[in-house]
Length: 379
Image (cartoon, rainbow, N blue to C red; front, top):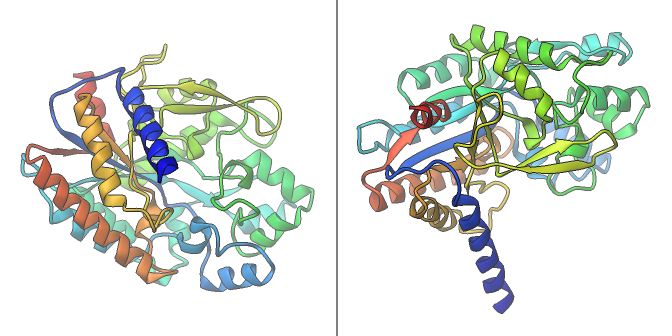
């Protein structure tokens, strides 16, 4: 009990320190940032079962067990829940949907014997799922109804040089995943991450024979704009990993705000080593881009036993105490039900409870998307 109280005190102290510097406001602003929309993860239930029988701990990693491309029901239930809750200005609760623009084209990569990368727009990937035939229209309806605002998460959610090098080396784990139309599968880690090919920008060089960073950003934004009808002005790097040399390319292609946590993981030239770089909301880099720092976490799929609603409310209270917007991280997997329907149902219920409590405790609340917050800070 004493150890638990001590850990809570340390966590609260760290949260308070992280909220001290930067942009301040008396307004009670809530921003939900939700990553991973559009990207592949677990292909389907059959792939899950096969990989489990091969000995991969896919049942232990929530992203392998629960996350898949979004379907019609996922989008509909999330939109309906957000529409139920309106802020002090009459606007509904809103999610920033951070979209990956494309997925690997596995057939072309196989035909090239893993020596070159090929991709397809995420809408092409969605066409292979019969339960996702209305996703594009439903998200656009959500944009019209002010509950969704897509922003940019990258062209693909895979570290291309790392992945292709592992396939060329015939690493069994990644070849087995490839056979299932996936670019990663759980290894020993409970929650997959950098070492599983997921950190798209987790390398230092900007242009190699396998990958061109600027081309990736440019093509990702082109697909994003052709899909949603506008360019994203904010961006979040997969796994919160990127080198500062990425930022000029982001600016060149329209990105003025960089989402993240208070720690940026800067890749170094060897292995998986990183250097930590710290940020706060409202901080600007030398190019004039603004950092938007998440200070609240609503991730019930990763921590199903925790009282997520109470913990989130305390974090929001702490943010507001320091005059900060509450920027809430809530990944796609929390609202996906195609692999386990109860995951979506339980977490949508928790989101509904959370939004009800937010409106009750802070009737003056304002719901915003990340790009709206960027405009507010820049005004």
